[in-house]
Image 1: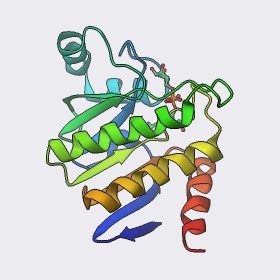
Image 2 (image 1 turned 180 degrees about the vertical axis):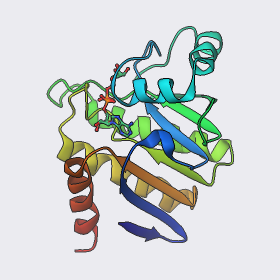
Image 3 (image 1 turned 30 degrees about the vertical axis):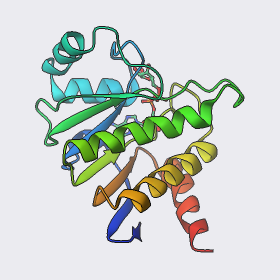
Image 4 (image 1 turned 90 degrees about the vertical axis):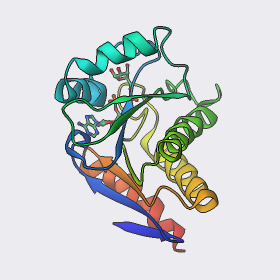
Length: 179
Ligand code: AR6
């Protein structure tokens, strides 16, 4: 499923982000950049130990929530991994929506800075961090659309969703855009 924003494409797919061939893939990390489960564990396993070596060397203080940092992509097909930290859901009144927007925007800015024509995102914060899926999908897609509308870059933003349930939530948001 996809939508055109000017000459750019926002696309939804179901799958495993580690096999994406976009220029950059996004990791939903923690602020210590310590590795973990979920998509973070899958990316580090698939990309290899060089990635953790780089995060330790370049970002010993980690990465604040809502920001993003860059490493190589090791054994993956992508050129870069952008490690971002989404908010932990605490009920919605602790700035979670702004922090989630900021995480997406930080990665999109890195994509432009690193001349990436394509980028793949997982559904940041919707796993271990407990962000309600309907709210997260609306916020994520709105921030992606705003960025792409104003910058007309990257050419392709692909949301790689790990289950049909997550894909369904994202699809409902895209369908609502047409109404
Ligand atoms: N490809 C795409 N999406 C995936 C994959 C994959 N291979 N594996 C899981 N997902 P989560 P968070 C989906 O928990 O909520 C880690 O321990 C998953 O189904 O990975 O931001 C970090 O180290 C869900 O929809 O990230 C942090 O401590 C989405 O990715 C913490 O979890 C995000 O789930 C971050 O939590």
